[in-house]
Image (cartoon, rainbow over all chains, first blue to last red; front, side, top):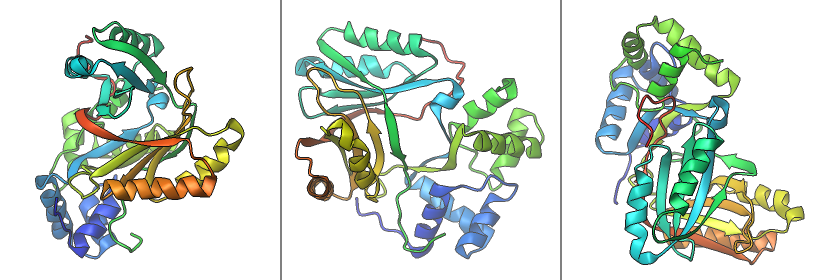
Length: 157
Length: 160
């Protein structure tokens, strides 16, 4: 750990998490918002990418609006088989996240699939895997909040 | 609803935009369409609700938010809205969903808590618990991260 950010970096991070400008001059726009020149805004972002702070810059889409089904799933897996099962699950491009967690349901994963049939196919394939005792599909019945920007600076940008 | 060009754009920007100073100009070149058409299409996805956000996705671990606890709560159905409201009011809570119960799984409300340390996350959950009066809850931290990737929509990849 031990990452620290300059005041400018914090402002840029707050700005671009919320909304990277979709325009002909996005870095000029960012510069105007945070109070620096286009070059400096651009170099700041390049540096943050290089340091691995920024995973990517792009679109975050609502899966269901694109005709996709998404759900969280929890599996009860024999601890001795968990790595094997995890690497099998990870092969599916539709599986976006895959974590081991504490508890009897110890393997958690998210699926974003083109249609319920494909979703069920993946879930059933996991159910049938050696060492998997049970799988619960946990789709969101209701969504109360989806927000993934982490406030760095205090100022509103 | 989405034509072939839309699908290509959506596939492309569900990844990472070019690192150049004028990324949309370069993207438009890549796709073989005029820049203003690209910008207009992107705005239309936003207006239609398909594009929730266009922005930077961070590696939270790298940014210092190393502790991520999935808090799971057994909340009486009648209290779900009220409990969720309290959870989402927390800056540390990024996602909050109601999910189904099962015979051996009584938790129906899930709130993702982020913090600099595990103790921070636990303390956030503790405060929520006291405020909403729900004691049947757990905070599940991840032990191992096997995969973390962004979803690629309309990908041309083979199905396995």
